Image (cartoon, rainbow, N blue to C red):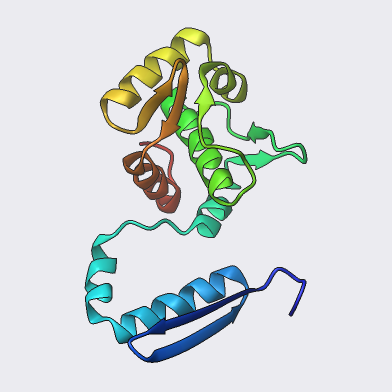
Length: 165
């Protein structure tokens, strides 16, 4: 397995040692199973904690957008409302940054306009509303990122298979 991108994790807790090795998703699931078994409060807390499955999100996002070899995003469904288009693009930027494929999850108004094909006024109005409802946050002059609430809302939209936030 060495050299093929496998992950190996060793956990030592209260005299218990556990090792997991394999693909990242498999190891994460194995670690979570271990934690649920040795730490009952973890299982209770994990029911309350929001921890997105980034591989699953990327799979769901692939129905709405593609990523070019140079890392640019291409929205496949340009007819969607601005808030949905921008939510998808910002979610993709977030996931890509978590997976180490993008430097950060922030996007400028110019990037959002270019990627969604929406006008300046439409993007700005949608961002104002999305900021008010907590879906996105402003990170700097003209830069925005999706919030945890926005991730949850977009995840629900993607899982339901319907467009509409």
